[in-house]
Amino acid sequence: MRYAIGAELRILENYIMSENNKDLKGQWGTHLPILMRLVDLTDGPILEMGTGVWSTPVLDFMCRETKRKLVSYDNDPDWHEHNQRWQSDYHDIKLVEDWDKADIESTTWSIAFIDHKPAKRRKVDMGRIANNALFVVIHDSEPESDKYFKYSWAYKHYKYRYDYTKCRPNTTILSNFTDLSFLDIK
Ligand SMILES: C[S@@+](CC[C@H](N)C(=O)[O-])C[C@H]1O[C@@H](n2cnc3c(N)ncnc32)[C@H](O)[C@@H]1O
Image (spheres, protein in one colour):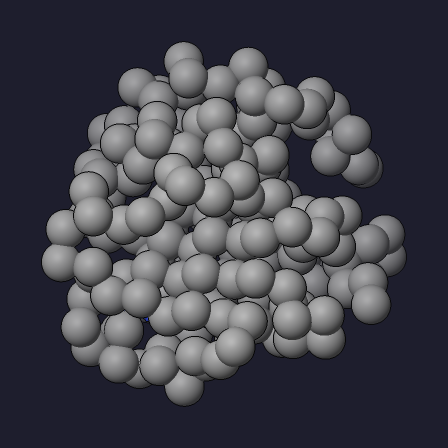
């Protein structure tokens, strides 16, 4: 099944931005168009760091048909509990007290999605995962947010980078294995 290609991707982007513009309390789910596209293009294991009501169910739905391996980590017991509903034979919902204890380096991931808290922790895990994930997807990558997330500190670990700016907060894709210019579809 293919979810986020061509015209469908444009419809999803427009929908997310129009809904977010109505509710200024928060801007959510803006990683979904590019994240879904990468899920479509790959078939190996997926790591999610930072669960919620957007990426966790969407990734689960996309992995369900083929029972594709999906591992979701959180460090917040309430959000972990909330997302226990997605635990299954293909989807592991894991709680960690300390992100250093998350077992993210022993698997070769097709996609590692980084959207966890605290904000300043993300750059550490971007460094840890640099050589065992084909695509590393990081949310909140607009330059103005670098003072919180310090992603610029971790970009040096990667050879290729693509900034997805059609939906804001922005999402950046990183890779040490494949040129990302193919993602630049107009
Ligand atoms: C940016 S959120 C992760 C959102 C998630 N990746 C998604 O797309 O739904 C980072 C952390 O905040 C917590 N969280 C998730 N959803 C939240 C929400 N709606 N409001 C406040 N905190 C949330 C969880 O502990 C999560 O790991």
